[in-house]
Amino acid sequence: MQKYLSFFRLRFSMGVQYRTAAFAGVITQFAWGAMGILVYWAFYEVDSNAFPMTFSAVVSYIWMQQAFLAFFTVWMMENEIFDSIMNGNISYELCRPIHIYDMWFSRTIANRLSSAILRCFPILVVASFLPKPFGLQPPTSLIHFILFLLTLLLGLAVTVSFCILIYSLTFFTISPAGLKILFTSIVEFFSGAIIPLPFFPEKIQKIMELLPFASMQNVALRIYSADMTNRQMFSAIALQIFWLITLISCGKKLCSIAEKKVSIQGG
Image: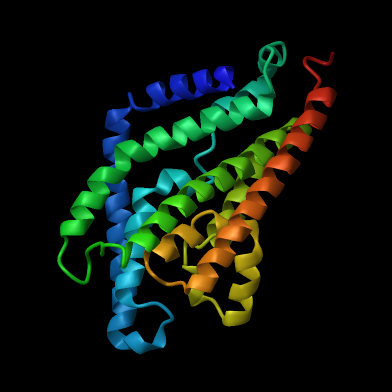
């Protein structure tokens, strides 16, 4: 465990050094968040009763999504890991007395956490002071806030475990480009990153909520926005835990198979 904590500390320390990149990211996320809110506002101005979420809930959903973008997005995968697999440098890691899966998990968590810490506070502070109805609303209760924090961390873990599945699949391909494009597109659509899941037809929404992608950001953001009943919240948390265990188990198994079949320079 100490080895992986060391990987975590090193990656976290490295990640918080990129303050200029974080500042540029904050500006970009403000722009995307504002554009998204204005698009929804145009529709809600026509008929606010025609939508499954209140406009204030949508606004909170979008601002929290932008604040914690580094937690949820699959496209923020580490090119360094892909490069090490493709150019053979992964052989150095295989020689060390560590488990590749656990090392990847700890460093990926650290990278995403450091990025989120640098970006989330400016977004949350500014969004909270924006005038209604465009500002971030506080959680409706302490229970909602606690459950939001819990599901936020579970969503981060589910996202990371899914990314490591993609890293492991790279061992069996010539190039990771196709995998990244395919899985990024699937996750963006099914996780609620583009359109919140309540806006889909009810039957389709129920199916999408059972998939692992819904456990990444959909649950935490909807809990914060008070868009779930108590029963829905606890069912969603149970699904998050189920998919986390499943993805980690599958990822470790696939990583173990890949390690045994890896070929470095034809050897």
